[in-house]
Image (cartoon, rainbow, N blue to C red; front, side, top):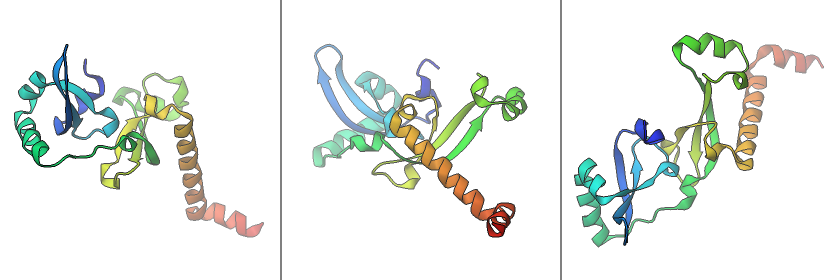
Length: 166
């Protein structure tokens, strides 16, 4: 748990590049399985050798032949695709019946499509994470809610009948 979000990853997926520093030695920029690029982080060579020696070897072989271009835009949300409520089992009924802002046991996750990446790279992100606390994220949330409202209007026969009667 001391790794925070990294503790839910299913290991390291790939190594993107490395740097050498005087104080910390060689470090590698890694992507974790099941997490978005926004959660990539630098880890020391000694840790990578322990966790994923074959990935490090593959990176060293590939790095001599080709350079993989990592893009910063992959850390920017492009669209919110879905929303879900997370709650411990004992608090699920309470969370469903009360306002979410009033409960510390409940949280919302968003399924995020990232700029420059396909839908297969979309990931679930907590609403209270820094990347979803910006004005751009507020715009994406509003856009999602508008799309959702339009879809409900189109497929709800009661709403459709009311609009026809008017």
